[in-house]
Structures are given as structure tokens and as C-alpha cells.
Image (cartoon, rainbow, N blue to C red; front, side, top):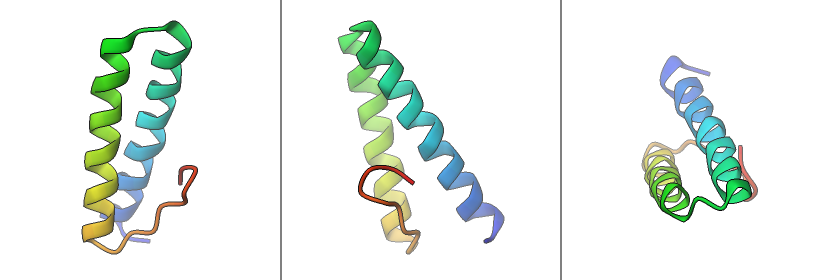
Length: 57
């Protein structure tokens, strides 16, 4: 696994964790921010052929 792939997967995991935390805390604004970031990261992964599982990495 190259550095780009490893870094991207790490960012996805961190963002998923942040999204879960925001949901648990009921912070609707932060949920939207984190979901947007996660969508962008998943799109980037798809564009570069990086496989991300349906329920995360």
C-alpha cells in the first residue's frame, strides 16, 4: 500500500469516527460538515481506485 492510499484510508477512518461522535452529541451542523468531508474522501478514493468497504474502511 502506498502512502497516498494509507493516508486516504486513515483520513476516512478518522472522519467516520468524528461523524459518529457528532451524531452521538447531537451536533447537527458538525454532522453535516463531517458527512460532506466523508463524501469527498470517498469520491477521491473511488477516483483513484482505492476500495473502501460499505460500512467504512
